[in-house]
Length: 398
Image 1 (cartoon, helix red, strand yellow):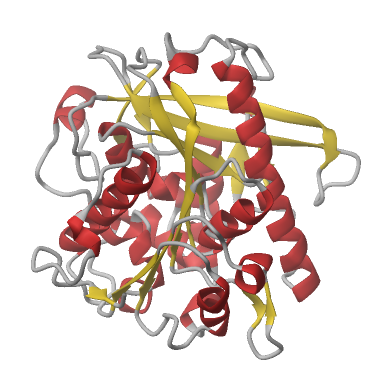
Image 2 (cartoon, rainbow, N blue to C red; image 1 turned 135 degrees about the vertical axis):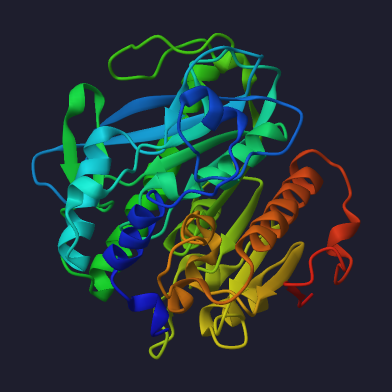
């Protein structure tokens, strides 16, 4: 638990520094954009398209800012047709600036040295292809939705529409159209604040699904009615929906599934499902379990062996479940940071462990894709039958 309570800003600082030390090998995206990309190329047969949606829930007040309605920014990545559209940056300018200022103050480095706007592998506004299952992604507490980009791009290339959600005023910064930036405004974490945070996250996820249904019916849910990529609504198969996330985002996936039966399968990437372990104050997903498939992926000193909320979840769960453990990893091995900091001369072991970043990312991608292929596409996967020699860093715990 000690490693999981360290300041999120320190980890954001590692991400910021990583932008200064991208891998030497260039990718197609890097070559075209004229700059090196810090993320590995996605796998799969499809090019990746991307767009953003500004979503406003006029029926709900923002819990963190009195008098404001709840509004969200989401990134939609999807299988695309070949395109010459430009590659999207990792973060928009307002978020990049806010993160650089925070990180610069934390580590005593000029914020102007940071660059969060390196090129990704996702083409902005490219035409969408096909009719694909939908996955919701939720980041960890105070984290940007950008930290799941490498996983989202890979899954989109494999035939999924991946919708990454920023939880406004909880994230360090969220940029809206026109350059307006909503900064972190959540009060210090207490048990009650944590419960409000998780309730808000689950409501955010269900609201996003509501708006995706509008899009699938031919509407445009974007608050500014901005032009959407051709074919995006048709690409959404909302009869097949999954959810995954890191840390509090993994908890969010479970809580969303308890409240919203539209989500068919979920993955928790190293997130406790407790508000207080000692008091056995757990989330609904732990106390009630689920009747739909769920995958638990843990790292370092965290697993069902040490987390009482995971033990409670497993006692109540009533469907397919597997546990995978990354012993040489750490909590933030399940984010882009594992590859972003690999070339830094900084000791990131408390955050990322000693596992090889490229191998870890490749294995995570394989397990996530296999899980959703089996439970959303109906393709049985032998990968979950037992330990795999192709993924030696992961322990299979049944």
